[in-house]
Length: 283
Image (cartoon, rainbow, N blue to C red):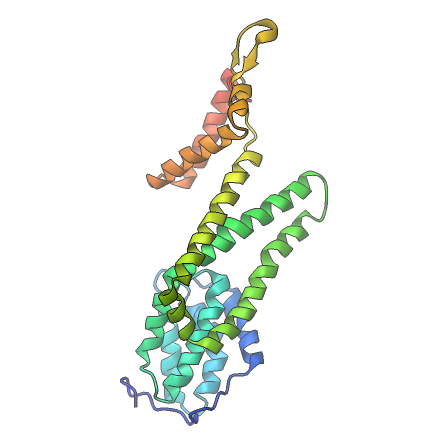
């Protein structure tokens, strides 16, 4: 008997009622794909997470309506993570719920594990999908569109969504298979820190390279007279191509660290561009 008087269901010790199809369907159902759509300030992604695993909970607690109701209540609790990684946590939660239904785990433990996973997994997920894959996909898609190639939107969707769906389907199965053992082992071996460090390096490389190709202004201030005249842009490009874009990225990064709103940065950039073009020191 567990601490909140949940009645263990009729699951036998080695019985598992969750099938491969159940896991795959949960990874691509409305709850999983709509993780951001039911976002609330109170529970953030809690409702979507519960919706993602609801059918599997119903199978686990098929003979225990009270246990099923309490499980639903547990999984609408606060939850927030990179959406593509949510199925992995869902697999772990379902593996734990089977043990809870048998009376082998305390019900509170599943939300404690979910809360412990949010931070480190979001750090990895955001670095991979938001600051790496998404930017690469957008850059390639826009480049194709600018050259008149109609495949630009399709290339963007494929680059961003193929790894995202693969991770969803693989993650829910892996999470269910290994339960909490994988993360415990990764944390003890230091693998989690290595993964986060690699993801951060890749993200910085991508953002740094993008500043060169996506900064289109030039500094038109001239030095010298006659054939010896040159522009400040040529001098700076001689030092390092793309140094102006990199410099502006550094300024934006510093302003964001000072909690300046991105909206004000956008408006300030527009005003600066108009003023710079009007006085002729930038084109």
